[in-house]
Length: 64
Image (tube, rainbow, N blue to C red; front, top):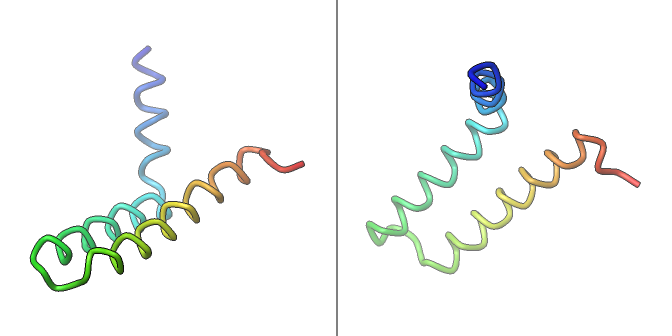
């Protein structure tokens, strides 16, 4: 059980994950402060998350 925890934690510390979390956080903060229009933030965050999950499933053999 503890081994699974460390394995999952190591999987989270990949560059792709870190970049995704930073982008989502930055755009959320800018939207909350009024620096960006909410629809702009939603578009960018949606694209980043779609790219992230698309490459995650591709990497795990989710191809046809």
